[in-house]
Image (cartoon, rainbow, N blue to C red; front, side):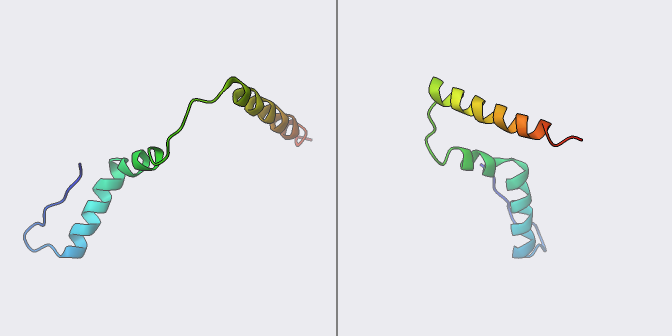
Length: 66
């Protein structure tokens, strides 16, 4: 849990900025976003479909070079 306590002579805006800096440096936002939805393990069919798509894009990318 991240929290910020107001220091002597510190404005509310400065405290909020300090809190935001701590929050994003802790990567808590990434963890919250990642856990927002339930994600199941991909099935074998889905893994194979992804591999086919990747190979297609790799083939297209290899044709770009002159």
